[in-house]
Image (cartoon, rainbow, N blue to C red):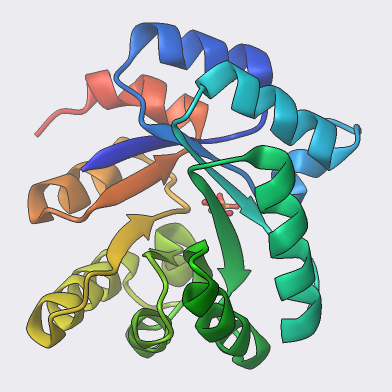
Length: 199
Ligand code: E4P
């Protein structure tokens, strides 16, 4: 399982990269807003800090046309190994289909149901990101939903991998690591608690 940092704070990113085997960084609009700076400036700084590792950045538009335009801008500014995070809404699937044909790397984000993940895979997404803890908060089971998504991908022969997101504790990360999901993006405080996880 790949391990990514779900944060945009440069100091925290540098510290975790120094200590742990990290594979990349994911951001979202609210994480970037915390810096109170131009989001593209922050993203460029993260890119400089992590080299060619995976960097995931989310589009803000709600229309497919707008998402596609943003994707072009992001890829141009942030370079190779940039994954365009596209929300798994109807216009998002339309954008994913077009962007995958153009060869963009795509992370289908904000996944709350296994069938959203199925549609994302069929639309050409490289990653599908189920929000484990937020699914729990809706009264469903985030871990069980993520495992079901893994089964759906395997059964249907999709190349799409899971990028599990929205963790509140290290045990959730451990459960999905043991199940063999492709990747997890985890907030710095939860990464630091991974070494304290008891079985
Ligand atoms: C992924 O990139 C998501 O934005 C993130 O994991 C959501 O986490 P939260 O539910 O803790 O906000």
